[in-house]
Length: 345
Image (cartoon, rainbow, N blue to C red; front, side):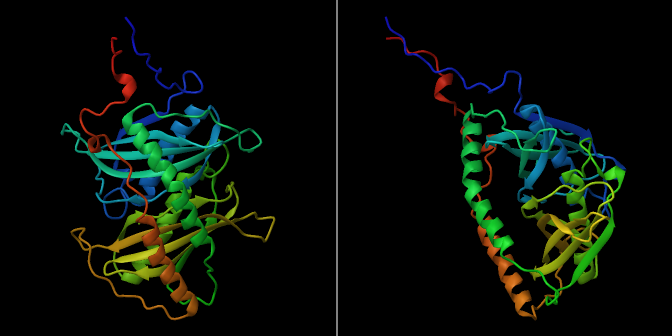
């Protein structure tokens, strides 16, 4: 009698490394924003923290945020709700870890939470000198992981095209679009244990600047409904002069597309450097939290028209990114071949 041999399940490159992290907590009143719900900046801080936990425990290193992908904020999270953030590794590069964060929230008296948001983050492992270091390679071991791994790899080329499109744009004084700038010093309360301003705090600043710009144009409260890819370029440390400039580049019937740049300047130098860049889409809301029409912005200068076309181009590019699979997307009987029993001969 013969039996069919079965390949063993893939195992982590380093024993004991876990490719996931889960944070679970109740939303406190202090977590609520202006609209009495969790705002986009706070949610991004939570996403950054759980993704960092997954990256650090997998790599065994201090990690820095390199990129936070597209995130739709379709359902507001209220005070008192139970929130779960699941961070799962979906791809590794030589020094990078691509981590998918799924956000669930619900009234704690209910049995099943609802997925509120989902986004891809990329962290890079560094040594004590802040030089990038190689990370253990991860291999998918379930059908869901295989799907997500394929989707993460497919997004690499889309993300590169988006970054090239963003890098090609120019923001100068010749633009006439509405804008808002926040200016302050990076404080000790803004940093993480590594001594740098953590990515979540920077994303909170991006959300705040987008709110100021959007609310000023709309003349009413706005909420963030979407963040485009946020790219981090350099660390910000205590005492740096930080400027967060938000500029309107396109309007829809109810939405405002706002490009946000974060620069930091060492007080001993007069040379500001780009620290982060991202796109936020905010919508005007009425007293009941319903989206309402806004005044349309008309580009005036050549730069205005170029950036408005750029905003529309980004929408088209991001539509090419396939949404990440969930367990509900797979057939109930789906299973990898190595889960099947040996076949007797």
